[in-house]
Image (cartoon, rainbow, N blue to C red; front, side, top):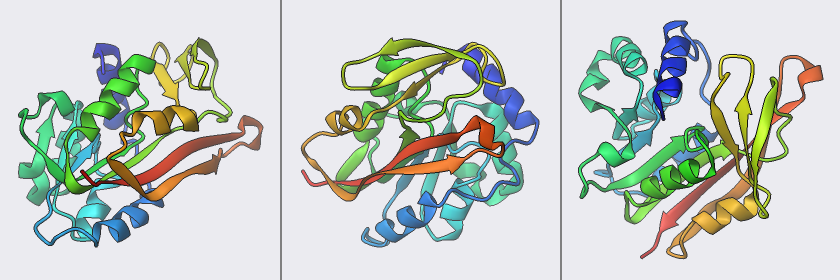
Length: 224
């Protein structure tokens, strides 16, 4: 994320965003899939934020390290769960030691930030941290979303993926990518086999006039 995104998310976390929100339903799928991993399995949550999904995953017994570019989010999470403070790392995937690998890598609504190239690079970097036999769990924006608020579409690819720059709201000035299914599938190397094949999850916004928000959810295992 660039400085604008850091500042935007810092403001959001200072306002208490997500603190009282329940975890997304995808968390249950991750917990179930992780039961196939050895007891000593180590996990990485990319974009753990202030703990909306991280804390329920930890409560379910997963050994996770939390990674986020927002110091505000990490400070909030450490305050909510002091015991997890040593598990939190400030930075992005590429800031981790080059040889650091994990049995479980999770990214929920994080790989969509930036333009197409940035989003793709972020997702590939996370895939590169999965050990053989490990799981990659991803949830990202999907095309077909009723995009709101006002925005400009400035990237459209032949595979259906697109990127917008928001003109209003909390994300004003920020670029957010929306993945097509062919685009997402093409990013997953052959050595990753589906545990939970990509599915669409739609959330109706509070005001029906604003439509719905769609995300792809998928879990893959690295087989080689």
